[in-house]
Amino acid sequence: MNNEKDKIERKIKCMGCLHFYITYKKERPWGCKKFGFISKLTPSIEVFKTTGTECAYRFEKKFK
Image (cartoon, rainbow, N blue to C red; front, side, top):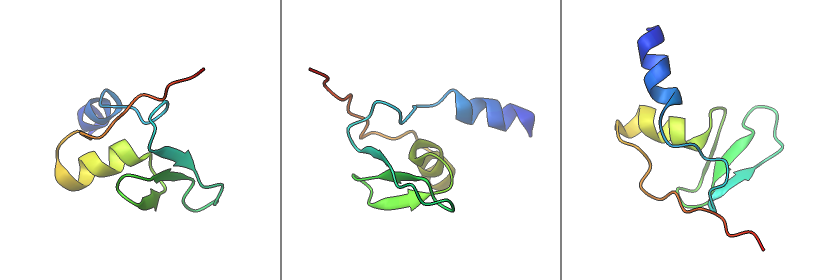
């Protein structure tokens, strides 16, 4: 079980992604504009748990 958690934590991170946003809702604080959902878990973990594959839409934000 702990091994599965380690695999998920090493996957793609949402922080810094163009599609990632914070909802400020206590029950579901994270959202993904590309997939169009909000979740209790970060979207990359939710996508991995649901599909079994890493998120293919991660796009790094450009900061000026």
